Image (cartoon, rainbow, N blue to C red; front, side, top):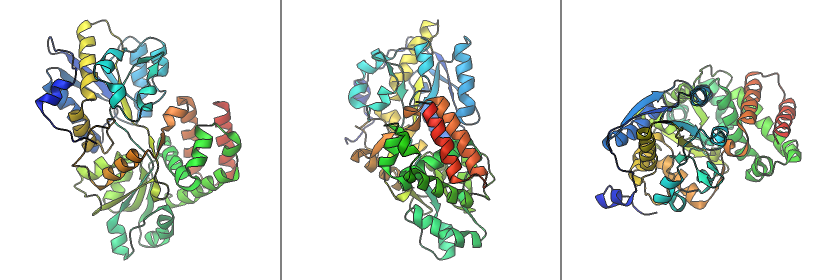
Length: 410
């Protein structure tokens, strides 16, 4: 990858629509944790420096809390200037209803099709040949985050993979620590299950179920093994009583818990806490078993409005978000990977470098939002909460419900 430079020549190479006058642009998102706030601050700083004004519209809570509010405003005639959605189908109905700004001219002027990698990030928001989003990062959920100090205090080596982590759990519990931190929200349980699917079931099984929609595979013995592994994992998380994902991450940061399955955005929390990758904490992509990552993440969409000044500001912001310098500044703070293949994150830490290597090798699959509808994702999340919080629900019963949800969503 080419080394990025904050040089005037580079800035001149990016086609940013001219600023006739400074325009306020309200941007809604759900990035409210410490690491997330630091990252979104980089976007605001860059936009303000360009001559416009970022009006922050952070909505506390997860995406599941924020998205209905965002959608209600857009469909109710009170659109914001820009809004965050995950890569995939979350904004598809809004696009199909003609409520989103067409960004094809911005994409063509700045060669997004040649620079955005992997290509499915743009494909996910391309409808009838028109591009409707500005992707900003790649977030992968298949990571195991470990507290090095927990293991140092136990006189044990830090686990190198999920199997070693599970084997270490009795010693961790005996020391009065929580083996696995897990927040009490549906998406966190669903995320953990997805990561275990890749690690225990393998990438071929994941593709069979999620890409090929093979319901025989979903109902088969290999997937049952995944559910059995998840049942074992829920025992490790039984004493984790926090709600939010960053609270669970904090249990690892403060050495109250040995580990957490969470996306690479957890890295932002470790950074804010002054933790150093490889020294204070360890990160294992693919849970250290199968080093594949899914290419989920975030993009910004721009609702249609009747003010031409806001429309112009929307296109300026869309162009800015994909520029190399903004990609570097934002993703270094966010813990995510850039969506451009022509930037070199020389300042990347150990965890980000692992992610970049996996991305460069092409060991990637689409994110869940790119392969299943929001309704299916919601139902799967609800199932996982029930499964992870109820020790009485068997792996077999959970698998049967899983197959039922997926089959109905075909």
